[in-house]
Image (tube, rainbow, N blue to C red; front, side, top):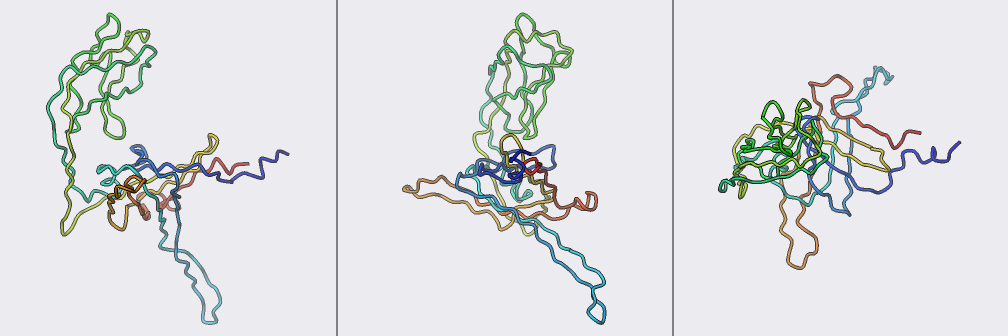
Amino acid sequence: MSNTSYYAGVHIPGGCTVFVGDDEASLVDIGVIPIETDTNIEITYDKVKIQGSKRELISSYVKNMKAKAATEIYQIRLDIINKLTGGVMNLNPISGSIINDENFTVKPGWDKGQLYILPGQNSNGNKQAITSIIAGSKTLAEGTDYIQSKDASGRWGIVVLAASTALSTANLNITYSYTPATAIKASMGSANVSISPKVVRFLLMQEGKKFQVTLFAALMEGGIKLSFPGVDNDKPATLPISIEGDLDSNRAEGSQLLDIIDEIGVN
């Protein structure tokens, strides 16, 4: 028998990646976690006993199941903070000037069916205006050769369709126009603000295997703490995050709080 079975489930320090989204299909990385920061998840519940007149145990059960997580991140991106809080902010991009005839080249060997994100994005979230897409001597036609699509974080790009006769042995030259944002303005403050729970995922990778915890109805708690490091402080600004996960009643009984996928602890 291999000795490796004795070490199944041992989590070697390697850091953790945290994702947030409206659902599991739209998860995005919330940013870099400082190297010295531990990410902790605590699952809590109340145990209830039902006893008879002679204190005999009739039944026992648990209720008020919750999951609490704590970490911190370096990147203080307003869109990510807003996702974590469930939408307490009003985000308004401030548009700059239109940029025409921007060029982006995908080198030979590109794949049909793959989304290639364009570096320039519109401040209003709309797709870019494609002027032309050329592969070798072929000019691609929208709908026949390519479509515009976006990823889970809302960034737009192009996908060359499988039916296209364009050859991947040539550069894919894309010319387009867009209006970038010069800043994002966040405002907040109302007597009542409706918020929506998010899916939050914690992922630890170890030698190609994962230990993954997904909370299905989670929100950031304890407010927002922004820091401005002093000039002699070597550490960048960080955002401490405390997350609480509740039950998602839209999911099946027995899987409403979270799920854990463990590939590290498998013998």
